[in-house]
Image 1 (cartoon, rainbow, N blue to C red):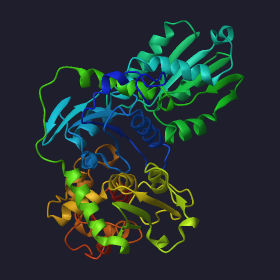
Image 2 (cartoon, helix red, strand yellow; image 1 turned 120 degrees about the vertical axis):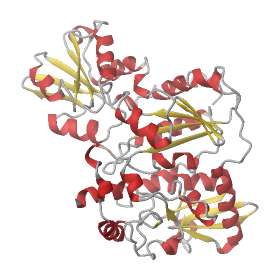
Image 3 (tube, rainbow, N blue to C red; image 1 turned 90 degrees about the vertical axis):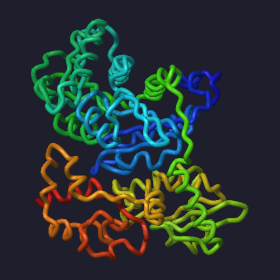
Image 4 (tube, rainbow, N blue to C red; image 1 turned 180 degrees about the vertical axis):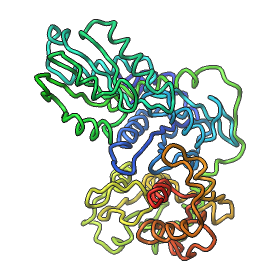
Length: 474
């Protein structure tokens, strides 16, 4: 898409200078539902297709690729971290900076300059997006709409005082426009509660716009189930409730991200240059060299099989499809389709842990360059090839369970007191061949050393699924 294309996102001209930059979209993710991460991945692909940045990457708190390993996939020398959250709050101000090592807006790391942007939902244009979502949800004409109530439904939290302020600001801004009789904020985890607001509302029509990024656990499940709402119109006690789509799935989000980045990217800044090749680039070359030396015999990496196809080209498929007739396999058109394959099982079950066994079969990625193969693995197994390379060179730095547990908070606080025997027992279940194909280099010394060893891919720290398992174990 060229910058003269009328469909090009706003701000594109400012970003087409070919800078060595990456946008890192960070989200919450979920162990339970793929819907939480789906809008973030969708935004990533749209930004990639727009061509404004050399790289577009994603990272999550509750699924892979993990926040703490986000920079293991970045080869650019400049990174814009965009928190894909609707408000400033606990995750944007504590979790994201802590996991990425960002105590300031602009941080220089070895070979890397990192710029932390404001949360996506705090952009001034979000009030406009909420209004558009409200108008999409109902066929009401302006006159009955002016007698309706608009409810802007946010999450809120008592853990951070700013969490609900963005929702309140947007409600106040839209209230001043006079399109609705009333515009009120409501929340799931702070007052005023959404359930109470709807129970007390006496308008004939109420439009509820979920101020959420994704149609995930809350916007797609808990709110509709708890309030008996579905997309479109529901009737409760004589009131028509129109339930809109989440704001984060709106097409304007790409423009909002570009606008968040543009001001810094085009402004004055201190000179910055990287003299050393970034570690992910070194890992990429080593990984592709290892594959190349396998020749036509190929190499197995976790549940994939990769072999040289001549003239610097490669083919990737599931290792169990190694001998399958290519005519019977689905040919992937782009490396983005690797995300679809890795995100769910053949039965459609969510796979928050990419290195869990059960990678979907029946596909191939043929005649591809080394760069395309690397990008495919960034979607299939992020960032396992980098960790594989670091361990082979003796440069992997595992973090113990206690180190990771001390970063937890809320319902996960205090897990660092878990005893080694309990960790060893749980590692045998969660990190064994039925749970994960990596070997846990972080685990207590007496953990079975055979776990995952046949695959030769290390796990440098306990994942969020393991942390959850420890909590459930008690």
